[in-house]
Every structure is written in structure tokens, then in C-alpha cells.
Amino acid sequence: MDLEEKQLIKMQIRDGFIAGSPIVVGYIPIAIAYGVLAKQAGLSLLELTGMSLFVFAGAAQFMGAGMIGMGVSAMEIIIATFVLNFRHFVMSLSFVNQIKHYAMKWKFLLTIGLTDETFSVSSIYKKQVSQTYGYFFYGTIMLTSYLSWVIGSFLGGVLGDVIPETLTQSMGVALYAMFIGLLIPSVRKYHRIAIISLSAMFINYLVSPYIGQGWGIVAGTIIAACLGIFVLEEEKV
Image (tube, rainbow, N blue to C red; front, side, top):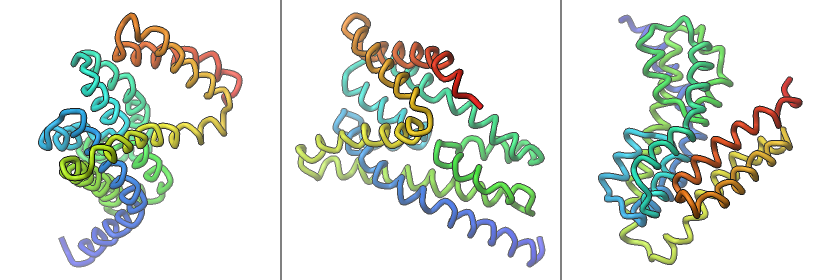
């Protein structure tokens, strides 16, 4: 590898770091909140950090930690997080189409790092696909986001033993704030999404006393998603 190639790689890494820096800024406080709440739910520092290392899905980790705290079964947690993260299949297929001329190893590595945020940012920067060593650009976005989430989770787990219990309990609002933050832009664009969201809440409220909170989340998510096929049909373009 000559000097010019090394410079190109450094430039792609630099640009990727700049493009991914807003994600890092957003991830760290949310990851800290997750770490604190997971520690409060009974997970050890190793367990909650390991979840970030191997799962790397904020909404699923918040939900999983909450369900662990409620004492639901492992099967309920697995199915609920699978349903919640099913959108990653769609995101991965879309992103692979964007980087279709990359080698298979790069497709595999890059799709592993996809989240809602990294997918959104990577989708904006499409010209890098055709640039030499462009995969280092996307890889830097994924890696910096991943590391910030893992480090933030670890810090949250450490703080969970230090900060007062009243403060840790108040951090539970982070989960709801994150979901609302993801939901509002969609509701503003398609008002009928509010119907789907309210339906999921109502179904969960109705069935949870009979089948448990974990299965209630699963049922509400699946039924509301099926309802969305009909509710959103007229708004598709």
C-alpha cells in the first residue's frame, strides 16, 4: 500500500468520524441511562455491558432490561426483542443495495453495525459508495457509534452503584423519551401511525393481565403492525 492509498483511507476515516459524531453525542447519554436502568433491574456490570457488546440495539436493550426487572421469562424477552428488531432486516436489505458492488466481507461487517441512526446517516452519504476505500467511511460511522454505546453503557453501570436511587428511578423516563422521539417524526408525516401506536398500547393493556406483560408487548406489537398494513395503505406513495 503506497502513501497515496494510506492518505485516502485516512481521509475516509476522518470524514466518517465527522459524519458519525452526532450519533456519538446522542448515544452516550442514552447509553448511560440504559446502564443505570439495567443495573437497577438487577443486571451485573458484566451482563449489561455484554448486552451492549453483542446486541447493540438501544430500544431492545431498554425493553429487555425492563422485562428482566419485571421477572418475565427468557422466551418472552427473546420473542419481544426479535419482533421489535425485525425492521433491521429491511434496513439491511436497503443498505446492501446501496453498497451492492462491495465485497461480501464488507457487506457483512457493515450491516452488523446498522442501527436506526447509523442507517439514516449512511443513507444520506451515498456518494462515498463510489469513492475509493469508501467502506472505511461507513465502517468508521458504525464503529464509533458502537464504541460510544458500549462505553456509555459501562459508565451507566458504574454510575448505577454511585448515584442516589431516587435519581436512577427518574432516569426511567429516558426509555419513554427515546421511543417518543422516534415516533413523533413519523406521526407528523403520517398521522395514521398514531392509530397504530395507540392500538399497540391498548392491546397490551387489555391482554397483559391474562398472558403476562412480556407476551402482552409481543401481542400488541404484532397485531398493531398487521393493522398498519391496512391503515397506512392509502398514504403510500
